[in-house]
Length: 381
Image (cartoon, rainbow, N blue to C red; front, side, top):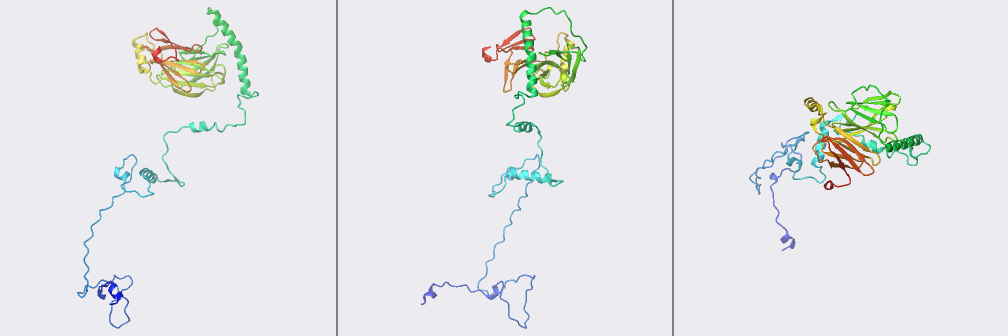
């Protein structure tokens, strides 16, 4: 037997009628069905002479309807199955990127071809203010260090002016307190004075009423400036301090709501401008100001509505001591804040510091005077 015949596998013989499509027939005069382009496809023959009957396929199972895509809304929480599907493509965007894309699509494009984005609620000029440092020239000497600059000459003049005043004041303090018989200044302030502060080196006096500050020249007897402090209603100015009195002076004001404000270009310059402001004490007693303060004064005339807020500035160390209707003495520095408990139930009515010995003296509303050392720990007092 031939080897090719033995190894050959049997071939299935199909009837020509069972084929789905046949070769085109030769032209004939008999009527044949010609499938035009666009007609229905040819149907397979169902003749019984077919050698192999095709096994009918079972009906296909209906696929479940696809899940509609979830469109997140602003403020709504998407289900876990929508945020984190079981399958994810290799380069598919995460759920957060899809949510951001949907939010951008809902906003639409603004006129001019620019897409509208959600603007942040917080706006600050800190970055612009910090960037000014890098805009300063590097090869140029700063104006305050230039020996021929106007700023340097003004500072030298103020230093020469303050030197004899320091010697004179030192001699007065060594002689002790003398009698004050001569009246050198009398005038009417626009408001009821509550705080009075003398400038340490010139003839300027700051007089504060409830919410305004007036500056007087006590040698000439004339008013220099008057401006509004900006504190809210039912609050009052309770303390003032001059900062950098030997140079370009700044004025610090404290109100009984715990707020601190620093002003410049006041008095003879007649252009007051707020440099900065912050909350010096955030735990002030609410019963010492506003309507409750006025009710307490009406019921008991001996009460003056608490001490409000008292401050003391230490020029040598650059420390600011704050206290008042609280139970602590708070020390402010450019780098840190320190709280010293007073250990008393009454308010702090007056405050002073000794820079040479690093001591803080506080007068309290119960009549006691307490001395604190900031360098000691709370357990050592």
